[in-house]
Image 1: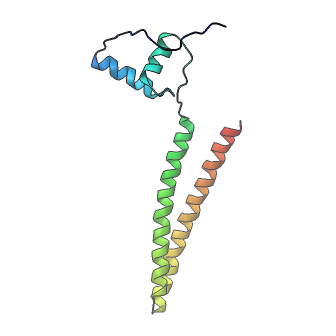
Image 2: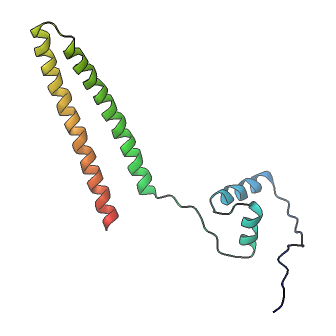
Image 3: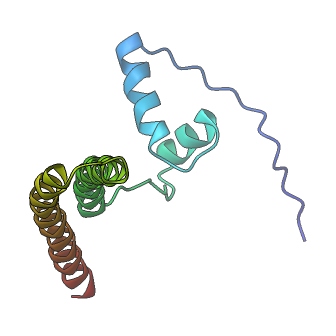
Amino acid sequence: MANKSTNRSRLVTLRLTPMEYQQLSDRFKGTTCRKLSDYMRKVLLEQKLTMYTRNQSLDNFMTEMILLRSELNAIGNNFNQAVHRLHTLDKIPEFVIWIKANELQKKELLTKVEQIKLRIEKISDKWLQ
């Protein structure tokens, strides 16, 4: 059994422009390599590279969920303020006004919840195919 030396003793020098180095660095950051030298060695020797990939449909889903969450938070805050006001009411006419306003907020909340359900169903159907 022959002992092969795994020490790298040969030095290769390469000069790059700042733009070339930036391109190399950007490509390196998209891989699982921990060191730039490992990345360069794999590219030069045409070895297998593992690249990070992003799931665009999941990114789109997360963007939509973030927007819906912020809308639901705003509606929830309005609802909490309305309930707080209910506890401080003294007069019946104000209570009747609050009930009418509450109905509009309730309909808006239910609409947003239904939108969330539909989006989740669409994405789950897409993922299950």
